Every structure is written in structure tokens, then in C-alpha cells.
Image 1: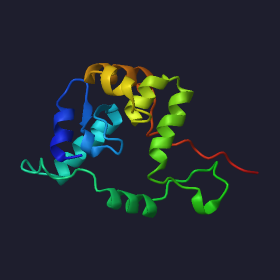
Image 2: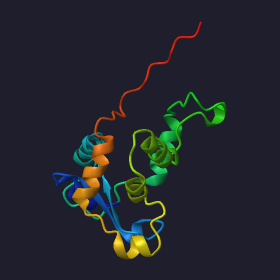
Image 3: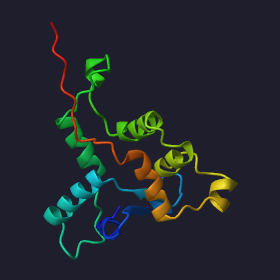
Length: 157
């Protein structure tokens, strides 16, 4: 994703990132809605790390973010193996899929936003959701989810 793509998405009333086919592993173009928590974080990064002429620059540096996650381990108390009991970059996508099921995010929208199973005639020729529709369906499921709240650990006796 480029800085310009992020800026364009954030200007919309219903912010959704336009992912181009060449930026996606399955070569599918789609809209990725941005939750208000993400919007706030992206605006801070734009204001602090990028200038007005940086639209062509990449916004995310995959390896840098992966390294940051390694240094700032977010514990996952339900994972039994201590060497794996922290958040990995690949866990974000898995979390969205699994938690999406818990909160009742419907299968079609979950597949679309996560770019899962979007190959074949149906997706290629018939399914063409619009940005605002994708955003509305996403927020219907995710609007009340506060991903910034960390649950306190229960005391052990």
C-alpha cells in the first residue's frame, strides 16, 4: 500500500482502502474497510512519518513491522507452547477470520475483506461490491468491537 492510497481512503466518509490486483497475492482487486481505531492510528503515522510529497512511498514496511512485533511481544495466554505464545504477523488475518465468526460477520463479507476464496467465475464476473457497501457490512459486525482493550489477567492463587 502506498501513502497516497492511505490518504485517499482516509478522505472518505466511509474509509476503505482500495487494494489493487497487483498488491494482492490472489491478484484480486477489492476494498478493505478501515475501522475507526485503525483510522486514528493511520492518521497519526501520516502526520508524523510522511510529508506532502510522499504519496508514492510504501506505507507499510512488512519486515520492519514483523521485527517490531518480535521485539514487542503481545502475550497470547491460551497458547500452550511458551515459544509461540505471542502475536505473530500472520495472526492478524487468522484473528479476523476466527473472531469474525464469533461476532456473526457473514461468510461472504469475511471472504471478501480477507481476500479468501475470491477466485472463480462468481467473484471474477458477478461479485463486485462497492466501497460503501463493503464498509457498511464490515462496520455492522465490527463497530462495537474495541480491539484496544486488553483484558486484565486473572489472579492465580
